[in-house]
Amino acid sequence: MKRILSCLLALIMLFQIAACAANTVTPVFADVPDDVDYAKAVAWCAENGLINGVEDGANFDPDGSMSRAMLATVLYRQAGVPTVSGAPSFTDALPEVWYSNAVVWASEKGLLRGYGNGLFGVDDPVSKEMLHVVIARQNEENPTWTGNAELAMPATRAEAAIALYETFAPAEPEPTPTRRPSGSGSSSGSSSATPPSPAPTPTPEPAPEGGKVLVAYFSATGSTRPVAEKVAEVSGGDLFEIIPAQPYTAADLNYNCDCRANAEQNDPDARPAIANAVEDMAQYDAVLIGYPIWWGKAPKIIHTFLETYDLSGKTVATFCTSGGSGHEDGTIRGYEPDATWRTGQRFSGVSQVEEWVNGLELPKPVLQPETPNEEANKMYLQIGETVWTATLEENPSTTALKELLDKGPLTVDMHDYGGFEKVGSIGTTLTQTDRQITTVPGDIILYQGSSITIYYDVNFWNFTLLGHIDNVTHAELCQVLKASGDNVSVTFSLEEPKAAVTTEGN
Image 1 (cartoon, helix red, strand yellow):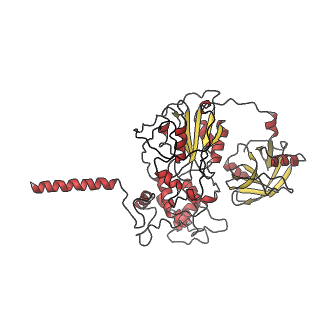
Image 2: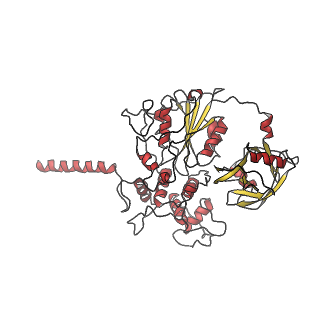
């Protein structure tokens, strides 16, 4: 009898140990403790054979860089090691080595292209932005570059593991938060109430006429701003930037250390203060909320925003920006249980914004008739047989440009630069009104007062924004402008060219 009892006790202890182990991350590598933020991602990558260890597999080297050849190999493994033929066509990529098939596959799929001079950059480190853009391409998305200087730093192996895990690992269910008492939107405090289940998404009803839309967004580095501006443009909504009372610095966003962003995301009670406020939230029938994804979730300042305002009875939808992580709003829906929630969307550029917004069944704004002044703020661009219209900004630089074009059309020979723009001299110098902006495809820029630039991709710098080409897609821009290719001749004019049919876009 004692022996039976002893066996039963031993079995119970074994089950308890197993149950405890199931809720922890077993260390796979000696240099990856089980309590670090990236432990689960590293373990998942190792278990799925995506990223192997170093030093005979004993260590992971989480702070080491990820080379272009290694990233191609990791994604090649994630795709199931497809069959390829031939050797790499790049002069710096060797045949019949560990990365050869992966480089062939990645270049053929357009995931990692060469430098244009016959080089692949086998040993070159992958930047943080390149990591997320390439993973997004592998996930059959259409990402664009932000050109953000903070994302130009080399990505670490730990960051690569996180990006892969957030993109390709099965999603885990999250508890839904509850609204705090009014006035509790601060950096401390907690609620003991049981989080309610998120409200079900109802079948959309026909959109009412005359409604007002607010597009509220938070953009710590500027990546979310262009998307929010496009959402506001398509929806006809008012744009409101959520400005933190304490701005985020580059050090605050250095995810490789115990930075401010990490501390906030790991603290359930963190509520960063907001410096500004929405004027008369009651006037809006729909609220669209945009933010970057931090560690797979909405930043805590979005929690502050939702605790500050009661959106009961309003239509609410969220959109986020990320190079690799998916859309997430399950952790914030519980703040507004009486709102009508629509399906959110993640964007890595602006090309899919219009389709998403039009599918939300938002209240339709009352459109004002176009005034002669709006028509006068148009410019035409002719490239071969293609004619685009562009809407000009209102600033001293566009005034000077229109004075120049009043004398007649201006033809500019434009060459490629940087893999994201066509640029050419205008033969004179115009007034500059530079500001730090993130360009989007279709932007027309005055550079250093004497050159005009058309962007077919994204960049971040101090520029003078002249205008934006109307209703043109990224693919159309690349095709007509011969992206990364030959020079093009572009004629700018204020009057519609008579020899071609005008289109808004191609």
